[in-house]
Amino acid sequence: MNTVFRFFILYIFLAYLTPVYTQSGGPISVTGDQLTGRLENGLSVREVTGNVVLTQGNVVITCERAIQYLAANNARLMGNVVVRQNNLTIKTPEGYYYGNDRRAYSERGVTLDDGKVILSARIGEYFFKENKADFRSNVVLSDSLSTMTAEELVYFRDNEFAVAQYNVVLEDSVNRIRTDSLTHDRRTQVTHCFGNVQLVNRSDNTVINGDYMEDYRLRKYSMVRGNALLIQIDSVYSSEADTLLSVDTLIIKSFTMESDRDTVSLFTARDSVRILRGSFASVNDLTRYDKTAEIITTFKTHEKGEVPVLWYDNSQLTGDSVYIFMAENTINRIDIKANAFLVSRNEFYPFRFDQILGKRISMHFVENQLSYTEIFENVLGIYYVYEDNAGNGVIKASGLNAWIGFKEKKVETVKFLGEPNSEYHPESLLEGNEKSFTLPGFILHEGRPHKSDLLHQPGKKD
Image (cartoon, rainbow, N blue to C red):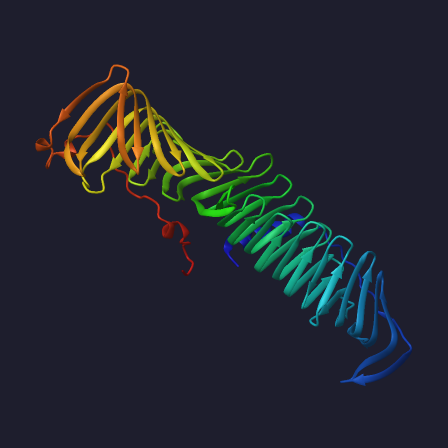
């Protein structure tokens, strides 16, 4: 059990346990069809068979056969054992009842039903003074809202509070949570998860993994902290032919991830955010993904913070904020606002970079291919000229606005609008001098995310 979980459980015990008052168990009374007395190792033993009823206070036990140890005030129970206390019922084929402790135990399979939850396991122990169940091995806790499975589970009936560990799964009609250990408050529907957390949401087709999670079911809000990883697989279909065109996977990794599913399906990633979807990749400090509106937004969090970086094919985009607009799971526009800078690398000339900057850049896509790009306000540009893929000089240009048309992922048309100005530098001046043709603020950013890096979970075996 990890340290954080131990500390949290200690806090919960102190906060949730109701006061336990000293209470004498009293002797167990037994009736049945046949009673036989004898001595075992010098101790008085009574064996009762047929319609056996054991009573201690408001605890009533029925079974087919019982062996009562008078001095110890204990009894072994056999055959269709049913333990009742007010609205509580416990059933097992065979078990024990300890009168001095007011405790029932079985390792032959046990089921508890109190009208609110049904709890079952291979081994079960119930403490009547504390109204606490301690179940182990193949544990299942179910109610009208959810089902929880685990290898070990402690349930406090007075507070309707569960503590579970080892291969824990909590599932309802929408969500499935897997984790090493958790605490779950049935009254508030608040769950805290510790270690190897996975949240699967069927309504928005997402999976979120992390080290720690808080889930607020009534608010439809979850927060994952530590190696947070969101994965969403979207299938793109042709409406005319009703056939699968492609399967796109969106991957977002960060230190913290929030999921708000109240009125919209909104995900917020903070701190060391990395994004990958098809040909697109990004690193930034803050990302918001509105799945309902199909918009991904990355932000520069403060004036001196790092600008978001976005890569698409051979292009790099930077700006104070980047907006990715999608329709039916395909990207149709990217807007870069404030200090927008676009750099494209030529695959045949690794040191030649087409560059353009302005206050805002808008990239438009058709069928997942870049169609044209618009650049607005005080545009500066550098773009290389080619003839049959051979270098043919470079053009430096400026204008109020600009428009670039693409065909088959290559620049086809460049237009500078509003007081355009340009100058051409021949190929003979370029060789070995390509790095001198850069715009102010030109930076080649490293650290483009790759799928294998994002899916790798520290501390886990691949």
